[in-house]
Length: 200
Image (cartoon, rainbow, N blue to C red; front, side, top):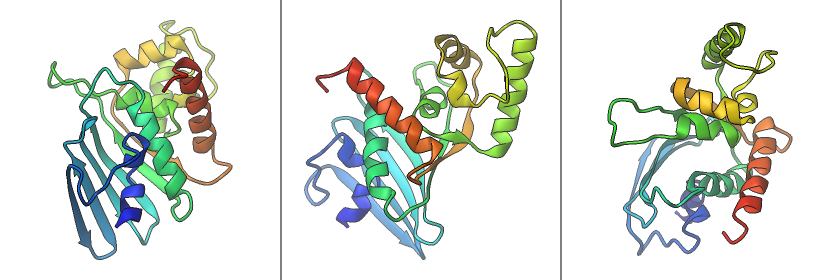
């Protein structure tokens, strides 16, 4: 059971988490798929992962942070999850949502996850590249365009601010291989965070 919780990333923010005594959790096993949900922690309302033991993928179905003033929760969870999952799994997947339906709820995944190593799946990437190209041609973005990827857009302040306004929900994946672009981007994001918040 401990290994399942390691694969969720929970130990990135709750290093001493004990599934037997701490908070609320649910594990549902169906064939070779395992759904792990952890709820009501000091930092998280809910964390849900669907672990596929056949395809060697982990679907990061939901992460809902409780403390909006605590920065970097998503990055810390992802770093911990990758450290455990890279041994036996190939990909993490995600739906990076933007929420426009409720003004009281802010979802930042659609612009945060791209900075941390998640790459757009093919269809969403094609749509994204077409939109960015059109905005650049129209003079609304002052960036060079060469089949730009989301992480390249988010490497600039102008790109981040533009995507916060114009960005959409997208589906992505994180490749767990040692030499992957995902791992490279995650390592760079962790360095930036530690330089910015050295006491954390």
